[in-house]
Image 1: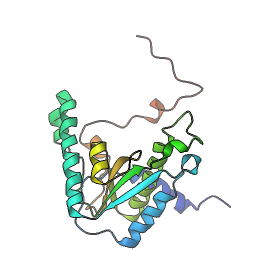
Image 2: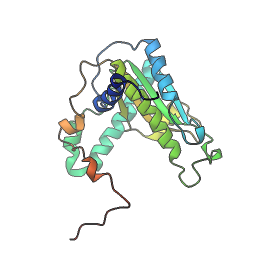
Image 3: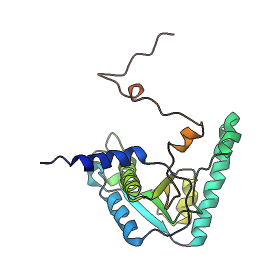
Image 4: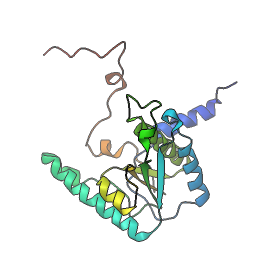
Length: 216
């Protein structure tokens, strides 16, 4: 029988619903064997044309971690300014845990992606979708293991590319903060902070086509 046990099924759904984008971490290293399990989980993600476009750089040098923090902080301030009337509200949010997390990973798209056309001829962005699947695999596995993870996307791509000697054609898409936490948020932090609310499922799922715009 291919169906998982009820307990296993419940565990899968629990990881999905209790996963959080964590920004608060406590000190302490991540066990190397656990990190290896999480990386293997990421590497077993689905990918278009089985191209496996993810490349992961583990940051172990303190000066690189600090340089990444500076890049993110610069973009945080630029983003805040671009938000106009919500600038001050945004600046009060904690948007990363780069200095505190036990492990820092940079995830990038591979170079030479133009050679892969299977599944990408009309949707070239499917390489990014594949990398997102790898990150989600790691995220869910980390939650099941009791570790927090946060995806940081506030950074200048070229600055990170230069800092880490990422080759032309490759592209960093995520800085992942991974580590131990005091507790997981009861709900997404941006929701608890009043930044936004989760949409209902019905507002995002349609049948037999896109719904007509409501009459003015």
